[in-house]
Length: 216
Image (cartoon, rainbow, N blue to C red; front, side):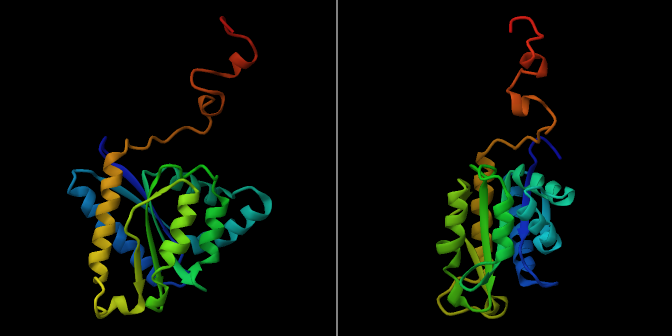
């Protein structure tokens, strides 16, 4: 990665393999990479299929501790410069697996982070789910979802519905908005979880707590 690089975490909550959820996530990632490239910003994308971590997410909910693979994924997501989050819509809202993953994150971990929201379902009747269910979830977490959420119904992968912008246009618009949000932010810096400064305060050490350094 160069000094201008950004890290984007892509979360796909699809349950099948292959899934239209992952297809939408990939299209959003490709479009975002292109929009960032237009701004001379290189992007590195880390894509995660939540179904691969489903049992670990449940274990985390039950025990309060994340298994190593899930912990690594969480660290990658919360330290990214931005997130692309895509979920299937079940019973008019996000999937249970998607919500369970959000529940294991620290409530403050996504504060100020740009997010591009995506959702898919069998029918366009669920197209408002992004705005009445998913967007409020991320707003509650103090993340910053971009204005355009990208919904894809089964018909969007084929012909265009009357009066509705084609899927490609919605993908490009959302990607440009995410790229603009990323470009405005200072690149995220990965921190060492074992650095005492992260939990004792900058410039402090265990010696300070023990009174072993001059001036304390």
